[in-house]
Length: 89
Image (cartoon, rainbow, N blue to C red; front, side, top):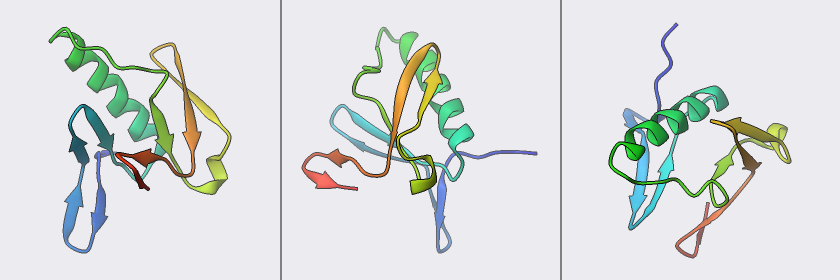
C-alpha cells in the first residue's frame, strides 16, 4: 500500500503550505503526517536546520483531539485547530 503526503481538493493535490519560516504539511492520515515530519527532520538537519518541536502541532479530526504523537522522540500535540500568521485553520 502506498501512502502519499497531501490532501485532494477537487482535482488538485496539496502537500504543503509555506509562509516565511512556517510550514504546514498536509495528509489524510495521521501516520503519513508523522512519517512526513520524520523525513522533514532528516532532510532539514542535513542543511543545519532544526525543527522547533515545542511549536510543532498536528491538526487532526476531533477523534484525535487531546492526543499526542511521538515523532523522533519528541512529543507532538494533536490539535483540532491552530493559528498560522494570525489566520485560524
